[in-house]
Amino acid sequence: MPGQRKRKRSRERELRRAEAVLAGGHWERVFHAPTAAECREYAARLAEERPELADPALLRFDMFCGRLEHPTTYALSVFVPDAAGPPGTPAG
Image 1 (tube, rainbow, N blue to C red):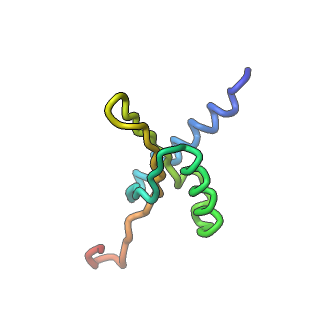
Image 2 (tube, rainbow, N blue to C red):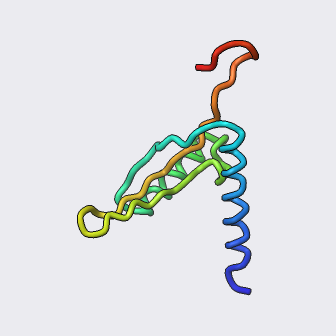
């Protein structure tokens, strides 16, 4: 069936994101642009510069629909795990 593999990978990616959030962490916006192409280019450069971000589950693309009042914009967010220190010490 056409598109089935793409949908399956998308569902798997969403599941990994949800598991990562449950493990502790937050999404941090790193880039904001008026076009999706700019966001994709930035994500590619970011993955080259920081190999730990090569996993697509650690990147999130958001589209903010402006409707009539504002133009549509795109954002790229990176998952940042919570910093956990040694047991018994306060975090952060």
